Image 1: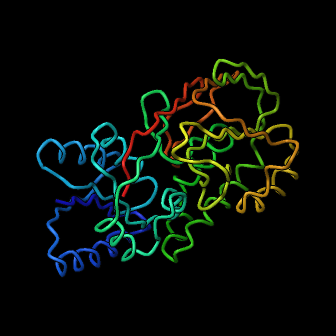
Image 2: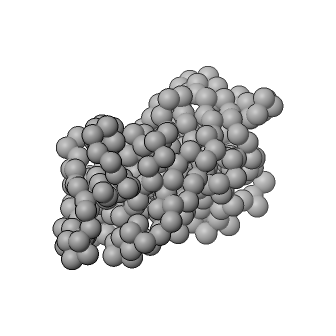
Length: 295
């Protein structure tokens, strides 16, 4: 049985509309399925845990965006049950990074007829993430975006990706870079004037921004992007080119590969995972190789 976890509010209601179309196709194909609908934050994690304890399932399918996927994997890791994705959010960076079709009918065909691939997963303290964990400026942008009215409005006209850019520009005016101590695979880095640290399992976040364009989800390593020492003008100038991954040649940007890291800062910095707020510094981030099956 395929079990679908539907986030009714994802994409400003778009996920629910997509689900109605998906359900018709499942019925036409005589696919044995069940559906559960989220009612509150973190509900998807609880639903997954309930399902795997009661039902014998072929796959758990998330119908929503990266936030929905984030919640689903936090109930799914360690079960060997594959994850399927019907993209219906504002960013869809997980789908983009793994080459999952953004059109729901093609995504469904992949789930029903494809073979699962196994990928790595990141963990911050006790919370899993699948795309990128961002610290500092990133965390502030994710926090501002999730609380914004404009994200809902832009999702309504299917331009949700722009909400991340609006938030980034707003945060830029008041954010102050900070000195950070960073331990990567037991090697200590003391880095001044850090804007952000992005710990990437996949290349994309923020609605298609290729922060670590060479990140791979099955190599057992993070790509860790450190942005430091830039002026606000230089930071703003680099933002558009980062969508194509053309920012990495800057002398203010460094990418280091590693399996585990610890981050310390004089004052707590917000951390997001997959665009969801998951904590603050100090923090320990580790990779769990070959931890999740994805259709």
